[in-house]
Image (cartoon, rainbow, N blue to C red; front, side, top):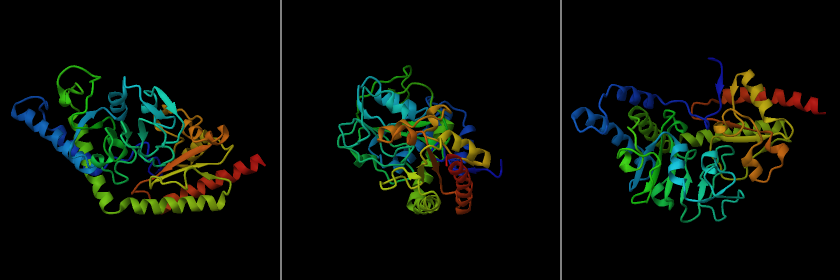
Length: 341
């Protein structure tokens, strides 16, 4: 496993050392964050410190942060019972709650929008007075400012920016009316019952703080240059390949590439055997590789939508790793072209 190359950062980014350290420290704090004694207050302080770290990194100083088990729960909390309209290209956790699903044109009258598409990396223009925005993929990779975005509610996930899996947040304008979906005690300002995941939240806060430092230091600009280098190498040798959204504003780390007729599931397995972890669409499809609903919504035919893979990289990805992947992918591409001839 040591020789494997991980190129699936959009599915889950590697855990940051700072997040791991914060989580280990939090494990030694015994108190319940809802208890009023000293031990409870220590635990509460960890939660509130993380809330502040996320507010600072997300530009959400005037907003409320409600911790959840992940962005999927945050989406349910934000969307359940609202009957909102959304694009047919949204992530499954949003798509499932939409009462009306529109074309992938984000300029239409949508109420929920994915700021950065997880499969293609394509960025959306956020309409005015947007009810819900899925910031999961963009947060930590691009500068974001919730307070000036005009969005009522935003979805976040810790493990997309180097925090632990199993913790996320719903960010909402202070005073926003919200009906709790998990009911019980008065946790999280009465909006999400259940004892907070103190350890996970500590890791989330540390990851968010470090993600902001990376942005300040221009780390993702270097990632984008590496991404562009990879794409140029692939396109030079595979002229019939399509880089999805190449002419659009995209996440700096995401390449969605399709060779019509070369099935995505075949490519994923071939690259896995060669030692490279890539994906075909969202990891939340429960391990299934199938035609991309996102690409279909964007107007691509079924053959192309069934042939797209996603390579998503991060600050730790080296040029040598990307060129090794290109070698492996292009070798299989040549075999595919020979068989198809």
